[in-house]
Image (cartoon, rainbow, N blue to C red; front, side, top):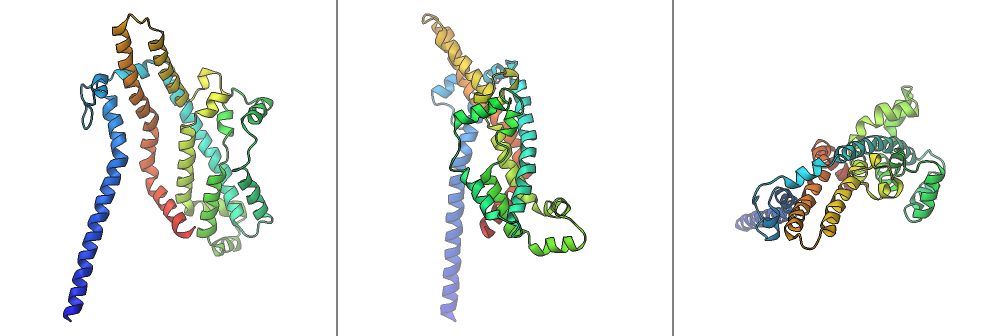
Length: 303
């Protein structure tokens, strides 16, 4: 009896030690992840001199909005925001319309040749035509320097297709589909009315992946767009930073005070640009976080 009590007390002590260690580790990881974002926020609102001197560590020093004023003074910033929101909204909708039905079809055993089709999809992840053939194809299709090129260039991600296919294959039972067909549902109605409502988790996960990809899209715009009215926000912000650095480089060497002033503005611009570029995704994520975590966990447990 005494030995049993000792064993149980030892187990309780070991559990406490484990939980304490786990919480400490999680706190350290949280600090390592959260502090850079916190630093960018306080640095974007602090005096550039304080940042250069290393005085900005935990709180704002010399509150100022000079960087944000310079960014929003640009007439192209709102155009860039509008374009990025349109690219993200329309592009993500198209991505989901293409990816989810394809993934569902490939997850069903009755689809003939599905392994060969999946192999062809997978090969595109390793072998691509390259930048020059893609550029020539875009010019040939008359999509160069158009709104639609930013929507169609990444209409399907094979990685997201594999994630969605695995989800449908391991989560949606064939018995459910058979029961729906007995009740008179065809494949399309079954997918829209039954499969999608029970697959909110994977829709949120894949949708978020696509949305972040569209929002951060920079290289495609740099290659395929020339009209500044079509530039996404990332390209607009890049041009603002380059313009600020170019002004500093072209200033006469004698105007030291003016150069220092422009360097201060450029210092504030860097952190302000990060906040402006990240803000929409940070706003969207809390609304899909529940489904996002659920979808990732389902894939990890059943995949």
